Amino acid sequence: PGAGQASPLGMADPLVPGRVREARPAHCLRLLPPARSMPASERPLPTLRQRLAQLPPRAPLKAALRAFLRARRWHGRATGDRGVYRDRASLERVLNTSVDPAQDAAIQVIKAALCDILHAAEGSAAAGQRAAELDRALVSLLGRVATQPVMVSISGWPPGISATERAALVGVCGVEPDRISPTQAAWIVRTLDGQVLGGSTLRVKVSLPAGVRLPALARGDRDRSRRGGPTAWLPHLDDIGRYSLTPRAMADRQVADLCGTTPHSLVVDAFCGCGGNAIAFALAGHRVIAIEKDPDRVALARANAAALGVRLELHCGDVATLLPGLLHHHPGALLFLDPPWGGGAAGQGALSWSDLLQLSDRILVGPERVVLKAPSHFDLSTLPNRWRWRWRFESSQPGADGRWVVAAITCVGQTDGGGG
Image 1 (cartoon, rainbow, N blue to C red):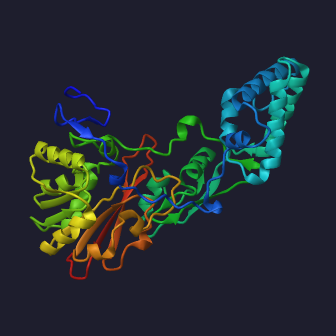
Image 2 (cartoon, helix red, strand yellow):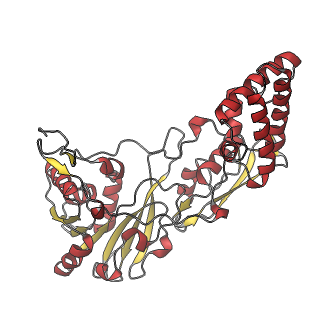
Image 3 (cartoon, rainbow, N blue to C red):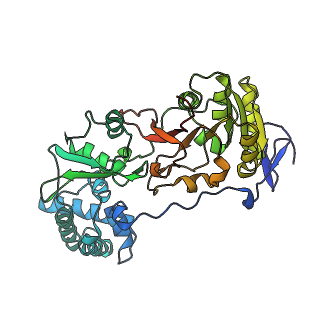
C-alpha cells in the first residue's frame, strides 16, 4: 500500500506517514475477566416494551403498536371515548415503564390484544373495541401516574462518599432526596437503582400510594452516560485513548495524591497507555518511568511527551515482567496504577483488586506510596492491607441538569513509613 494507506493486515500509522502498523494478534490483547453476573434480585426490572417483545405470541411489535394507535383514535372519534393512551408520546412513556415479572400474565393479555388489533380489518368496530379494552388493560396494569411530590430514600452508599458528593450525584439539594417531583424520582430510580459504586449496590425506594406509579421518562432524559466536556488534552490518541484519557484536572489531583509536596520524585507508571498520567507527573517536575505493552501506544506516548516538552523513560513490554526489576532497582519509587478496565460501568458487578490488576501481589512489594485509578464499580473492600487507604470519587463535569456521574475512584495507599 502507499503512504497513509491501510494494508489487509494492519492500519495506517497516524504518526509516521507511509508506515503501516501490524494488526495485534489476539494473544497480545489483555482482556479483563467477564463481569460477574448480578443476582436476580439486583438486576434492574425490564420495561414493558422488553416484556412484550419477549412474551408469546410472536408478532411484529412496532406494527402492532401502530395499529393500536390508529384503532384507538378511530374509536375515540366514533364514540367520544378518548382513553388514556391515544398518541405516540403517551404510549412511548408507558412502554418504557419498568414491570415486574409477576405481571407477565396481564402482559400476555395485552400482547394478545395487540395481535388481535394487528390482524383485524383497519377501521373496523372490532379493532376499535379491542383497542379500548387494551387501553383500559394498560391503565389497570400500570396504575395511575403520580402527580404529587413523593418520598425517596437511597441505601447502599459506599464508605467515604460525602454528603456533598451524594447530593451532586442525585442532583437534588440536601443529603437525601426527601419530597421531590415524580419525574425527578423516576430519573433517580433509572440511573441509580442497582448501580454498583465502590463495591456497594445502591438501592432506591420510592413511597407511593397503592395503584400509583412513577411517570416513564422521556427518551431524552434516559441517557445514563452523561460525560463531561472534552478531555483530549493530548494531541496523539488512539480510539481507546480518546475514551480513557484521564482528564487533566483529575491527573493533576493524582499527581498531588502520589507525590505530595515532595519535588523531583521518581514515579513508575505501570500502565502508561498514550501517556496522559505519566506526562502530568513529568509536567509537575517528577521523573517518570512508564511501562506499556503495546508498541503503537508507546509511540503515541513518546509523541505526546515530545509535543508537551517533557521526557519519559518508556519501556515496552509486559508489566508483570518489567515492574519487579524496576521497583528493585529504584527502591524509593512511587507507583501509579491505571490498568485497562473497559468502558462504562453501568450494569456491571463489583470488580475486585485481583480481577482489575491481574498481577501477583509479590510483584507490588516495595513502594511506600501507590495511587490506583479504578472504575466506579471497583470493590473498595478488596484493597490490599499492606497499605493504608483513602479514596476519592472522581466526578465528570456536571451536565445541563447539574447532576454528575462517578467517572473513576482514585485510591491512595501508603505504608506506615510512607509519609503524609
